[in-house]
Image 1 (spheres, rainbow, N blue to C red):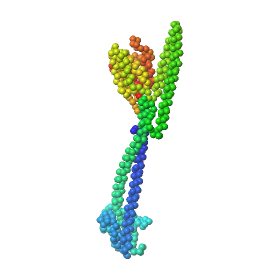
Image 2 (image 1 turned 180 degrees about the vertical axis):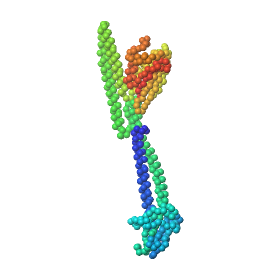
Image 3 (image 1 turned 45 degrees about the vertical axis):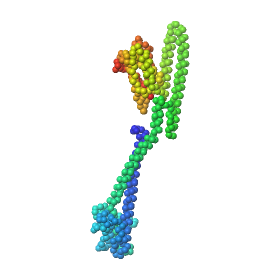
Length: 458
């Protein structure tokens, strides 16, 4: 998964969305839980202070009495953080009633801090408890006897804020753990989803690779509905390309027959004339025939290059060529060593590869003293066509820099004692250039000539 790949883009956007949404969802859930827990805590305090107010004021005539029902067992534990207190507001000489947990200590009165009551008449305040702990207070103002006719008393119930904070901290830990596990799971599922969703594209890639290497002629296989139109259009394009090439080859063949017959007639008629004009016509007609054959061959090669999927196993061309050349030069004991991978394939016509290798290997055998080496190396790429590197060298006398510069010219021969027309290397050069390859002559470590040939690989 590279940075610029479609899979990376899908995965990155999905993962970024997950990593952005989960923290936001966590903050919202935490705030909702905190508010709910706070409301529950306040409701508990309000219930306790109401119950204590009813028990302490309803049965009293002038002064409140200590409530019989303690409601909360922690009211009995010293410094537990849970306290209640009933303090006089109008008659300061009246005693103050306290829970056992409060002991002799007192609690601040919210009414003295001028805190406004809520709709239910309760005042809320956070304060410091007798043990230095943070507590939340709720206060009701009531009087013994009939409402509004006796001295007022402050009835307070306090609960520890640490109790609230501890539960919030525990919830936050569990929530964070759950969100982290959820995030990891969602990222893993996203990765699987991207891989599984883009799997048909990998099958298309493999199918196109098979077409390019000649293993298949069209894109086959069952593909998802969204990709079927692409499959159909690609197959139609391949079929159309093949039809164009077939028509071009037919026209080239027709042109060849249309030209060769008149040239043959002209040549035969001119040979009947033994004069200078007849010889000149024969000479020029043969030149025309060579030129026609040359350019028709180039047109055929160009058409063959345009065909997708044409490939030739290099090893199947080199082995018969080796046996043939060793038989031709058996009187000189020429040995040809071939180092070629079995899967090396040339992206082109078999007869063109035979023409190229046949000319180069035959030339190496003519000049070699006893050894000719052919080495083939193929490099492939998933993004583009690979390259086929072929090195042919001999242990002959070799060539100078000047000779290597001259030998590629059409019809040039360095040694008239050797058989040939001087067109072999020129034909090879034309074929190699037609396949957008390269050919370079150099000195071989064996002492002779080294030919470095680069062709397209299937």
